[in-house]
Length: 369
Image 1 (tube, one colour):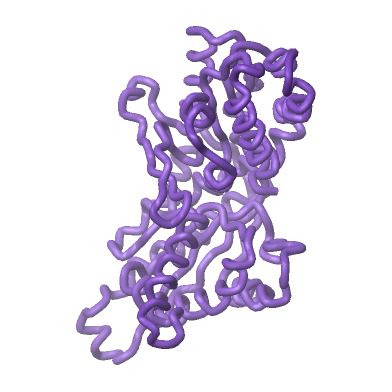
Image 2: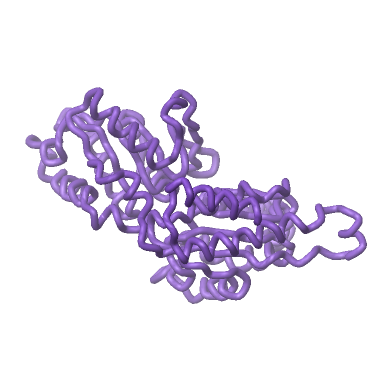
């Protein structure tokens, strides 16, 4: 039995997972791919020289399904079980930011089509590219994806990705979508499409019906969101002093520090998000990269904090539109956050969204849906 299957069986026996036919079939396919990848000789080996060409890449995998169905967990197991060094795992949005920056550099060289050298550089770095959360939201990405991934797969790169949507729904209703359709056809031709829509929403189950909004601010509220973080990420509470942080790419040359960042969950203070000079690009980057955001220390708002309130409204709009789960500690319940004064009327839509974001219907919706 492969290492991946052994680890999966261990989780079932321990009760951390439940028997799920979709999940089992996906694990078996991932285990077979991991074994195939590890059997391929290293780049530059004698066998490669004998073949005199790049070995054909093993067929990749596209895992899609609703929120909390275990896609990220299976990707964790798969990626850890592949022993070859030439592998890379990255959030899809971050990868596309990197690709556009590489293309920009190549265009400055004025040597013709910039895509082939970018493909060659990426393929040299990794024979396995594992993507979290494939979603296409903009025309710039849509226009290049078919050529980019045709080149990568042709260069011997195997692609494994997760998504909340089936391939046919990617970039749905997007501008000039007809130019994107070859990418969908490529995925369907070169990757196995595996659906994970079993009966258990592990993410909601781990929250165990916990509230998502805690008021007033205090030790109890802080302890509650900390517990939620550890449940969602499987991070041991006793090691809380060493929770990973991250630098989130906002645009070329600009990043945002994420104090706690793990398995698609981010923790921020209200002050970091709304008291500093930030705008829609910052909040959109957060919404695209994290399925759950925890905000601590939301104060009572009013005309004296007009700028902070304005930023908070833009932040909530971005999280809401991308169906990001929100947990928060706050000075008051949403309807009491900005009760009166100039700007209170404009804040009512934000209150409405904050209330909806606590509903079971919203919490069960897939990220980016």
